[in-house]
Length: 310
Image (cartoon, rainbow, N blue to C red; front, side, top):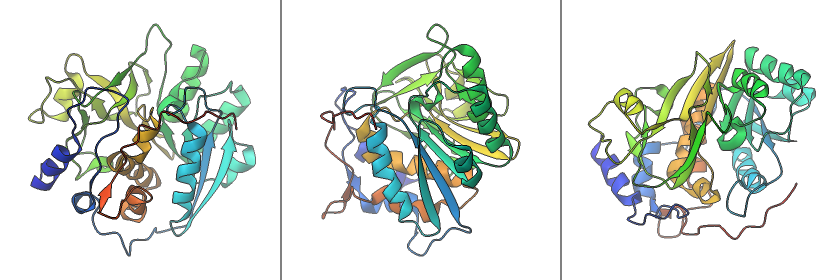
């Protein structure tokens, strides 16, 4: 790992074991060593994004689907050549037909066979998807297998799949040999939540895993992934037909979306899914969370939000 990345990791790590606590803000100068220069960066084509969301179903500060949609849609719209539409619970066929990329962050509603057929066709025909946190959960199990066909991984059920919050004592290890995370630190620390032991399609490649305190950066990603006690499927890539999917089971807490390192992972995933260079998306890493001293992030736990249905 580069020296700058080591400095950055030291800066974002806190001693507190509390899960519902954001990382300390980090300096813009250190982040720029990971984002690269992006002032004149541009996309190679026009991109139509569809943001799929649903009613908030947790206490405030967790699963704030509407609030996160309201945070990210304006940020995405500021990027030249991007347009953004919104869908509530499930897209219409007209929205599928128009979209290049579907970003989903919601608790999945009941989805009919006809709707699943539309979703699968969207992906197989070349549609791109970014799936965040609980978007990979649907019940019962026959629905879960259909969802896995669309996004690569999905919840098997409470008896077979697992979930847990994780702290900075359990590093999130990245496969930096994969293009989606190339050039990033081998591990990053958050206080968040993930799922694992889910249905996984053959063309899924797990690119992020929550390790244990026993894992070190001296290990390869494959060694961490197969180690006892680690939690796979924190991040994955998936291909089906002509489509590309970037998925993550992280993103439980609202403050996580105000963390510049987490934003960096998401925009790298968006760029990979679209087969675009990531530089054009890098303003999102800093937007609205950079103070006048050049520190980026938040100290707010954001646990006092009020959930909304729409």
